[in-house]
Length: 201
Image 1 (cartoon, rainbow, N blue to C red):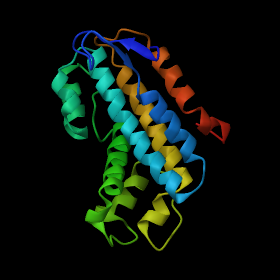
Image 2: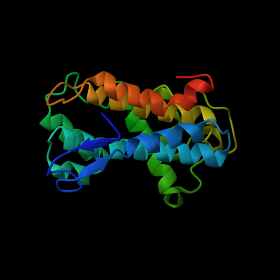
Image 3: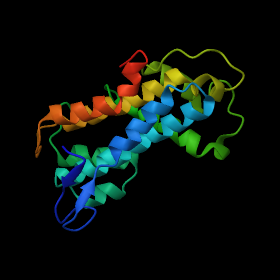
């Protein structure tokens, strides 16, 4: 898959050329993840999760899935993709990498809608910290707030890796695939190269 992919009349630009957006989003997320500041880690997590949205939109167009999927929220979109494609293994939020992506989505929502969840305590809203740890997020140092524990470099790097793994897992589904999985895998690894430069994937 090149940076410019022909998606056909059902694409974002009718008969036009769609420039892949998830690549620069994931690249920027990886670069921010290694800076080491609270602000950079927060931005990295949100950008990584946004890269997933861009990827899923492109995926549904390339696989000629229903255009309505691109307008769905995270959970609805995944369920619709799973329903339209004979996914093997199935998209199941209890399995890797979907359980990690599910937890990352919850984290992203808490960050984007922060004002709705003030004073959540050190465990985070609805046990968010424990949820992240239960799906393999890196250990978190005790802090006065859940944000100070979670919004650190190690979590941001984990978020980028989770999104990359989920992209590869979805692209690995054989139904209607138009290009080898290795093409997508190479783009993911290139986008996440900042992580390997600092002790890696």
